[in-house]
Amino acid sequence: MSAPRSRIVLAAALLALSVLYATWFHDDRHRLAAMLVFALPPLLALAGVLRGGATASKAAFWAGVLGLFWFSHGVMIAWSHRTDAGWAWAEIALSLVVIVAGSWPGLQARFGRR
Image (cartoon, rainbow, N blue to C red; front, side):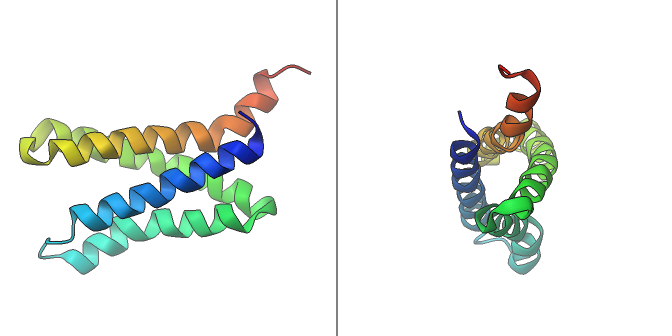
């Protein structure tokens, strides 16, 4: 996977994660707080990734860091709340895509052919 393709995958995963959170917490009684904490950060990272240049690299890095949080949250919810397990597994899958796609250019530069 090339660097531009990994950015496209990262952008799609961030958008999907934001939509997942917006759908998941739509009927929550603390909807505004949930949207600010969960749905807004992937959208901000998406804006940085789409901007390009050095901003895209920084946004990809921070998306990967946040992906670790999203992965941990998904594991916690899948383990403790069986009713939300489907949402949590989707969160886990998307967070793994964010982590891999955000890290791919660096991994390719480090371990790729010279």
